[in-house]
Length: 412
Ligand SMILES: Nc1ncnc2c1ncn2[C@@H]1O[C@H](COP(=O)(O)OP(=O)(O)OP(=O)(O)O)[C@@H](O)[C@H]1O
Image (tube, rainbow, N blue to C red; front, top):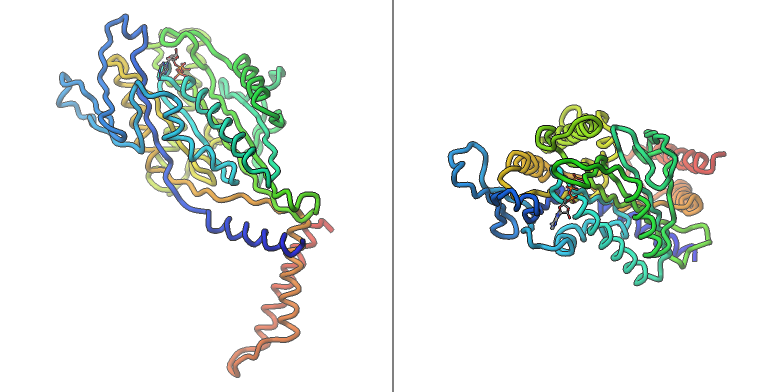
């Protein structure tokens, strides 16, 4: 059995190395239909998706404007497309990477009332349904699915699964990156359990009425599923390896102009925080789109600290930019498209995340040690001009390194 475990280990290591590939963030644009309010105020539709990749600005009265009138993305969805279609043809492939040990993130970006929550609610449910389906079809592996949810409201992080309002803190972990301390993680049992958790999050999330959206999300919400899986064959034998990854479903608060959303008091204060963190997000994305040179200001907001891996690190990411087609929102729509254009130039480098049990790792290292020691005992014939003493010293250093590593893993 041990030998087969070792084989699996090697396979997984190879997979991990081979899988680390650079790819661009997938950028999808979703146009929503005119809202009842927009129809009632005789709004005009100015944007049209002319095929699966291009969206056009159709206002001929504004010809001569310095802004581009045509934009190209990985996929654009017309107002009559369903969320199911956006999921199937856009986000699904990236979201489901998580079951193979690859971190992924799907997030919605757009002005207030453009359809972010509408889109992300559907995407989250379709993705989790597919994850459950995958788990049922892969009985040879044992899966554990953990669910957590936070919101960032006025720059404070709140646990959406807890009634305790104390803000959660962020901590930088040298191995795991930025982590949210003490966040509640529920082991997800089934579909019914998911629905219960989602309705707790919905009830807890800060929403408020603004002129543009009577149920406006006033916070950024991040729902995270962490999925671990191991081959059942090796379970309990101590030499198993685990695939571990997370998928984030991010519903950002909407950017808004105070004058347009007619906000004042608490709504205005929230709006300022929302706009500030979205500004940091767009600055980070703009800098990343120009390459990784220089300082990237991830630390300027909690949102970008938490989203750092999805923006430039070990994750696959899809961004869904939601738009209102109305003439009255043209300025905000252009800002969203500008963000989308920068985002499509950003690359991430995802890899399969393999966690070895200590026993599996130590076993692997002991084998390596035995191999090096046997090479020392019976060295291969060396040519006369080779420095035999130097070769011995090199092997000795390698052995010492492996021994040290084993000792630290065993914490002796
Ligand atoms: N593609 C769509 N088709 C039909 N209705 C939609 C679509 N997108 C959004 N809507 C409707 O538009 C309204 C605003 O949508 P939603 O609350 O999702 O916007 P939002 O971008 O999340 O806004 P905010 O940033 O203020 O929270 C809702 O009533 C929603 O049902």
